[in-house]
Image 1 (tube, rainbow, N blue to C red):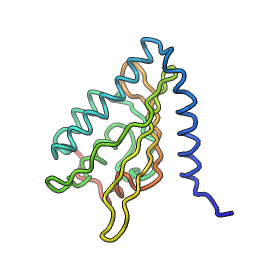
Image 2: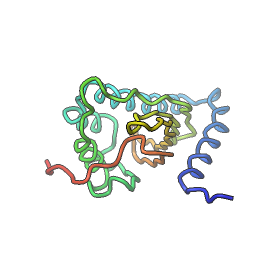
Image 3: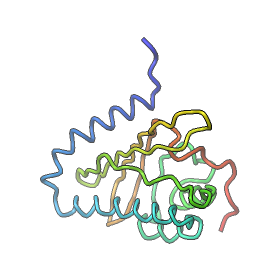
Image 4: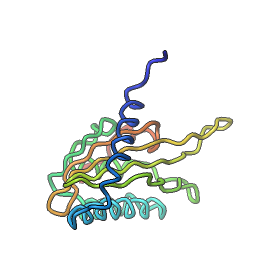
Length: 174
């Protein structure tokens, strides 16, 4: 039996939990519906900025609109940029813009569900492969805790390099 990488196990468990919780969707409270909308709107704003090559110019206003000032980011790959909302902003400011006309398509949302103040988004994205290689989809798990109508805390995992490798050096502080 081949050893299973921890991310594969984590993503499989997360997707199973998301599917099991999706039956709960029919009984959302008004607050859970608002929480799901918040996460969907956040990703729509990020996708729009990315599609128009405007992430560097727009990430600060997007983050301030959707994230609490004391936002907690649990992301291993970007720790060199600092934690919290400012670290998230610096991470995305440092990402190179995709070449004109070459932005990857937005992720396909497989599940977007809420349970109280928690929203889970499971998505898939196929990124371009190296020349001669076959592109494979990556599965992405994001979980948010919502507080006072804003994103308060975030956890994620990916089955591949869906977002590409993190940039190597943070940009200058603002």
